[in-house]
Length: 410
Image (cartoon, rainbow, N blue to C red):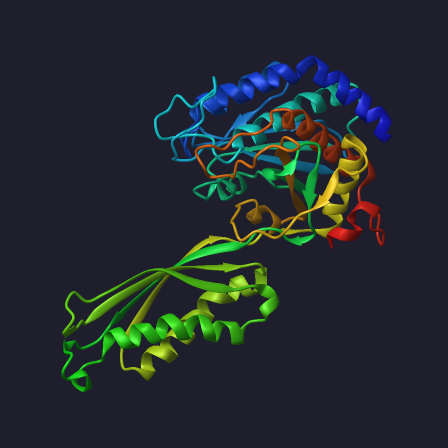
């Protein structure tokens, strides 16, 4: 389907449905639900999909759902949206302000959900007209903010048989009508680390009779990040940053235990997998030099989102086809985490950043109680995601070719 024909069909679809989609988003915004508690949200989505002639399947926990559009022997493409909200108060003065105390959609998941719903409706129409040469699997995923919802979807066959997956996220630093793309790492892995140090305490007048635990802990705090920077390829951007340190209760007493907590972030998947063992070995080396015992509690978060180059090419082609020339802009790597990464560990795909800022308008940063979007981004998002699905199904990938819009994104 050529770009002009697709834009015409999408324009006609949105002329009929865009205001209803905006109203749907506002309803979700007024009734946000936290991770694995998205029962109302799930039912609202299921009702709309059923009304469009589709057959959604709710996940066993009762939140989140999977639905397929199309049939036949062609490829299967997955599109994902996250549906949960954040435990933050809504600080906006708008008619659709959250009605749930201390909970709001401050990350745009209501927008992602609405875009995928609109895309579903459009693709269902295409399928009825015989214009869908394959299947599109719709993943309305719970609990991205936990995280863990992606693993729940995968555990129940969400990406079984899927050839390629795509998703998007609101970006308040990008204008509406534009899409930020990048091949390779686009978000970071983010893990939590807690270290407990113990050893004989005593009087500060006699440190030689103790492990001088505070001094030893200070060495761990400084030497561990420094050693990591020399043991790991700097291009992986593996970093250890401390956020909490606690030891002792008196100026003249050397304590017998202490604790340090921090985060480990990384842009390279291989380095992320190797990080726990490496940090443990370095910790034991530093601790033994100062005569203290050190134990480590390493909590995995999510891996980095690493966009597949060919999938980014498809996103770029789809954006140009549905949104017009100049729609694709480069985007930077983020040190934030996103559980879309779990899908990309199993199948190729790519994650895009959808512009939600009014041209010349203010930035409303995510994870803030003031976050909001220019709601015309919903229509642009439907155009983009529908075109992405059709591009991936109709064209597949063309070996050895890199689309013109992608040249600056690699």
